[in-house]
Structures are given as structure tokens and as C-alpha cells.
Image (cartoon, rainbow over all chains, first blue to last red; front, side, top):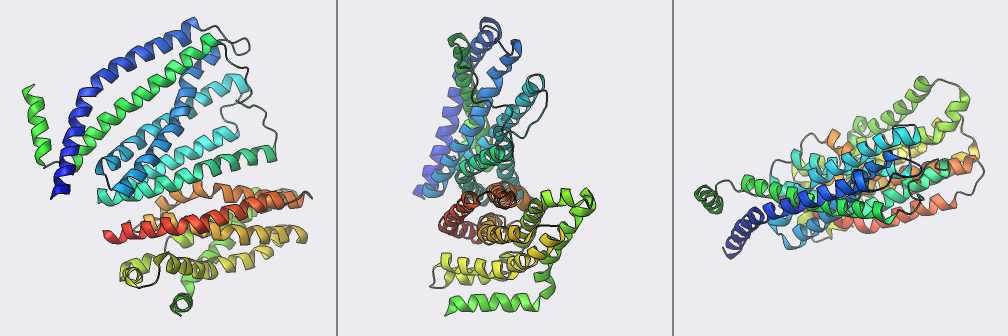
Length: 248
Length: 221
């Protein structure tokens, strides 16, 4: 009984908290994003080798960072969900997965668009590209497993375990792919040894990275709100918060 | 004694359903057969990709065999009895997986040198191939069993299992084929073999816990 009360309370509390904080985060995101875009597209100087084409970095690199970051965050939610059986962590875990998959896809697509003018090919079996692609499949696996199991509590536990299995495997996959590539052929193009960035190129990139993180928080909170309602459609707290919303 | 009983029971069940135990073997054989038909019978091409063909076919055959791992035990309640027994569930699961490996994978490894010869692989390279298969396939079973247990509650889990398992098989595939390729070009094979051994030790120590927690999730439903 106490436990039930506790979870109910925390769902309602989280829902209200999310509803209150999302507008602030959105403002912050818009400011950071516009500043980052302006800095990246207009004030940053053109690259001496790649010209203006390098500017896609301001979307590509933050998206690639987010793709890994979100998976690690999901694994942390997975541990919390499995060890302390906190429902909210399950909700946050499954709400993160589509966002992470979207960032991974965005990193792949922008990388491909960038690769065409720079390397002359849409796709190369470069270690980073390949492991990013495998990461996309890991995300899709989490989404697929969650969708296939009808009982969502069971599904949440299953994806918690799956995410942990995945997070142990990610470094192994990454380094094995890296090794595979160097063993078969010297990489013709590497992203690693680019010239160190100029400061006025770097600042917009970091701002964009922070903006993407804020975007993740916004998207996560909105998704988690919807997921919470979907899981407990007939509970009292849902009726209460919806009444509150209508009264405002 | 009951540990031995599990292997005996598994072998008996496999022997009584011979056609089922044979299916990974036939599948492995047919996949290997498809490659010469698809890429042409030129011995140079086949020689270059023979390690890749065999490893890919092993991967797919393992995946096939995993779709019915724990399935019957889940449906008829044997799993519940295993969980209720006073033995450690992790140990029981490991023994069951060992039996699964012996019944489903060992025949493939026995068949592999013949197929390798048919694809034009030299004898001394086949030794390296067998070594990678012995080191790699137990990891495949352990990793695959973890995911297969998670999908137990889903009745038709074949496609989903492939999506979940194959990305996790990439390291074993890479090290397995690179060890064989290194042997083919006369380079030392120790590096990738050590990596495979490391992956095997990691899976032997970590996956039992994951499998047990996955079984508990499946049974709780």
C-alpha cells in the first residue's frame, strides 16, 4: 500500500515537474540553438580545406555525441529500473530510445551528406561509420523488443537488461570494428586527425552540443509525460492533473 | 548428478526429434552452398571469401538454433521446475547451453573443414578456422541465449531475435575471420585468437547473470 502510494505520488510529481520545466527548457534551447546556428553558419570562418561544406559539422558532431550519450544514459536508467524497481526509470528508458535512434540516424545521414562532397562517396566502411550504424541497430532492437512484448512492465524489464547487454558490447563492437578496418585496409579518410579547430569555430560547436542536450531533455520530458499517462490511464493522479490543466 | 541428467535429457530429446537437431546443420550447409552459386565458381574469389562464408553461415545457423532455445521448456513448465530446484539456476542454464552447443553447433564445426576444402581453403588454414570456431561459437551461444531468453515471452521471435542478436555478434565475426585471414597470409594469428578468448571469458562470466535475470522476467509474466 505504501509502495503504491509512493509510486503514484512520484508519477504525479514528475508529471507536474515536467510540465513546469519544459517551457523554460524550450526557451533555453531556442536561444542556444539560434546562437549556435548563427555562430556556425555566419560568424565562423570557412575551413581552409573544406570551404563552407564543413559547416554541417554543427549538426553532425553534436548528433553523433548525443547518439552515444543517450545510450549510456539509457543504461543508467536500466540499472536504476532493475535494482531499485523505480517505474519512472523504466518510463525514462523507453522514452529515450526513439530520441537516441533519431540522433543516430541524423548523424548517419548528415555524415553521408558530408561525405559525398568531401570523400566523393556517400558511404565508406570506415570504422566510425560502421559502428554508428551498428549503434542504430542496437537502438532499433530496444524499440522492437519493447513493441513486441504486450505487458509493458515485462517489456520495460526486458529492455533494461537488453540495454545493459548493449552497453557492455558497445566498446567491444567499436574497437573490433576499428581493428577490422585497419587490418583490412588503411583508412583512406579518418575524422580523427583533422586540424585542431579554431576557437571561433569551436565555440558554436560546443553551444550546439549543449543545445542538443537541452533538446533531448525537452523531448524526453514530453515523451515521458505521455508514457506515464498511457501506462496509468485510469489512475487518480492522471484525472487530477488533467483537471488542473483544464482549470488553468 | 542432476547436472549430468540435464545433458542426458537434452541429448535424448534431440535424438527423438532428429529432424529438428539436423536443421541447423542443413541450414549451414545450404547457406555455404549459396555463395558459390551467387558469386561464381572462380576459385580465386571463393578462396578469398571462404572464411567469411563459413563464419557468416555459422552465425546464421546459430541464430536459427536459438529461436527454439528454452522455447519448449518455457511452454511446458520445465523452466519453472528448474527455477524451483535447489541448484543454482545459473549453473543449470550453463549446462543446458553446453548441451545446446554440443547438439546444435558441434556438428557444424565437424562439417566446416569439408566445406572449407570444397571452397578451396588450404589444410593449414583450416586448423586456424577450427580454432576460431571452437573459441567463437560458445560466445555466440552465450550472447545469443541472453537475448533469446529476453524474447521468450514473444511467440514468434525469429525476426526480432536476428535484429537483436546480429549486431552483438559483430566482434566475434570480425576476430574469427581476421584470424583465419591472418593465417591465410602467413601472419601470426595470436592477436585475434586472444581477443576471441577474452570475449569468451567475458561472456562466460557475465552472461549467466543476464540470462538468469532474463528468465526471471519471462517467468514472472
